[in-house]
Length: 604
Image 1: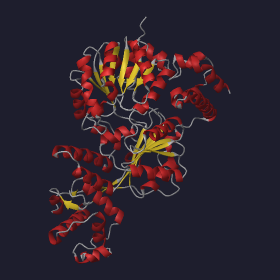
Image 2 (image 1 turned 120 degrees about the horizontal axis):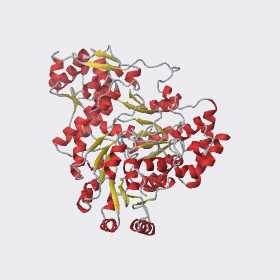
Image 3 (image 1 turned 90 degrees about the vertical axis):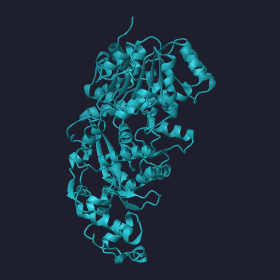
């Protein structure tokens, strides 16, 4: 007898009901329809293809871009009693042969395949000889050339429609604007497929963006004050920055590991395995890390360099709090980030249209950083979703002030204008600030800039305040970075209106810094995770038991049970196997395998 989608959800995965569009997507695919699914990280995308693969006859083939994560995805399914396997370059030929034979014999419910492996003639012939229930193309934004994780292998996946026109195909991603969605549909021949777009809101994540000033110290203070002992990810733009940041955190008592493309595959795999399997580990990484990471208990994601786009930022921050519990997205950015990003765009190899697209993406990211309104409102508006103020971001909790920066802007634009028009010179931010503040440095004296009429006219603002003014002028394209790679500043067409007093500029002023003993706002979210009374001790007992089981099985702890499930058990104190059946995340297979142990932990 064929089991229904809802029965599969309840018996295999241990959840009572579907969330959001899951039911509609699953029903559509079970009936043989194609779909493009946009659902935030942690929103339950995987169920949208796993359940149809279990309900429909044949094997569900999942195209996944990261071979390092396939093992964990398969391990999690095996724990649930689902017959799953993967094919990628990490296996020897004997293992690959066994998987192929299991597929051909109809002994697999789900088969994960790397895109480069799938496109080989051997793999295509094998798939043709077996029975396929569906194709799921995970991380589908990789097909978009505008995407931040573009993978050229994904462009060849249109072959699925050509070879198997009757097999339903799902393209799934956590982030895509309307433009990216159109490109995904076009490149994967999904033009007629419905788009299921869930809300992009992750209300459990608290967004915080601060002005960069000794960023490694700021990062350390943030972790120590708000996330000591928590699992987290720190993103950097360069490999060197990854290495030095990981080393700095380790020196200061934070368990941290580096991850970037310059490390050997063996080191990357080992570091990733430790991150997935050990509690309280911090991964310091370039954006090469994290796509497809299923670890549910990442309590913070920090950026110490400005992301290149809102899409990239949203997807990276979405790796925090997948379990629905409070988490923090923390970003430090400053003037140099803006200068560096503008320079990188000017030096990029694409044509003018490509550079304009990069510039628009950066402008949107800068707008998110400089807004005086709700961060979440601004973030969701980028994905064409409306919401009111969230009450769970820094601008809602500690509203910044807006101040009239027109005169300050005129002073610095005038300094740039006079240097260029009167002397044919261009300089970077630091030198311009020294001129305005009347600082008689050796370089000022060398160029006789103390004789300029603008020398000292900005002594009323601190160096940090002037850097904020410059940063916001660059963010609004009222100043430009030179296109020759020197990082000097020049006027733009839009500068004229400000210089003539035809445009008023309102700038963001950061809230007053808290005193050393003040309590960070984010700790309120962390307190919500602590359980009352004896429930906390039961939770710790359950975690200790789970760690032993995970070690014996050679899998991450969350593959056995998520923290959210253990917390519910600790709170509800189930007394029988029947009681356990009502706990979210305890399916039939896990109840039968671990039920008695769970009840024993509760009794103890």
